[in-house]
Image 1 (cartoon, rainbow, N blue to C red):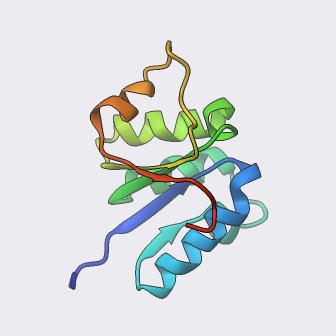
Image 2 (spheres, helix red, strand yellow; image 1 turned 120 degrees about the vertical axis):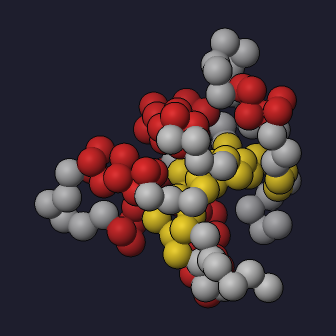
Length: 122
């Protein structure tokens, strides 16, 4: 068991909120500190500033890769910032989702081991 629980940033598309919320709850129950925008960003907060600050101070970034997230500009930016800040990326691929062939983020699926879930129930 880890004595140190890393701080984890969860990047997801709005359409995957149910899965991301379940993942966030499970991680919190296991004692991890997470940045999950629905519970962390408050009314009146400047959204981009909170995202960038959280990515700077996180220990790793969980990327939920889905048909929706690969099209989301926010999800792409979060992945780029996490990479820029040299944060470990933990990709979770939902189904057979994939980044466009031209996307630099496609290297995630070539160079980093990831978990693949066939359904949200996994």
